[in-house]
Length: 173
Image 1 (cartoon, rainbow, N blue to C red):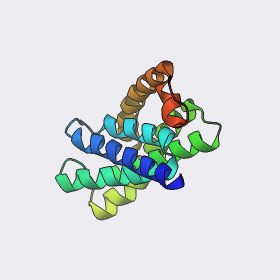
Image 2 (cartoon, rainbow, N blue to C red):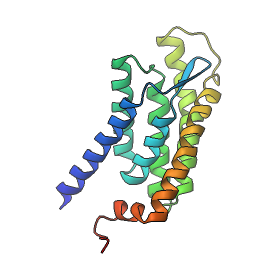
Image 3 (cartoon, helix red, strand yellow):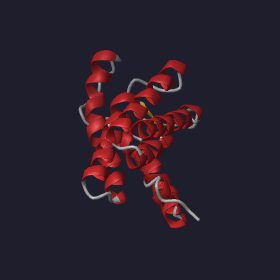
Image 4 (cartoon, helix red, strand yellow):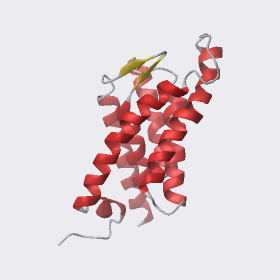
């Protein structure tokens, strides 16, 4: 039983990773970074459906594959992983409230990810920038994905699909 749960989570993480990579051509340049709202949508879905650790793994794999394909930047790692982790933690450990998953993704990606991206940009990429220079571009990207997630998760909740995915033992007659 426990193995099937892990397999189910692994498969859903792989599907969300594939969605991120397949839609990686849809990006909006803002400042020195590329805004990629689908990554943040998938981070929220992974945080809600899979929990914080699978969502971090999914964000890492998606960022790695996007970088290998040339459709992402190194700045995707701290932004997407911090948002996925905080969104998943807040959702899982603070009463399963969707608004906390949304806020966790926004704060984790824009503030924490933006600050974590600074040393990567300065010391690895050689770009001169201020400490908070990535917070606003990351916020713009994350806000777009969060808005899409609010509508998508709201529709899933309204149709009862969200409950069936979160509780596999619940069957529709």
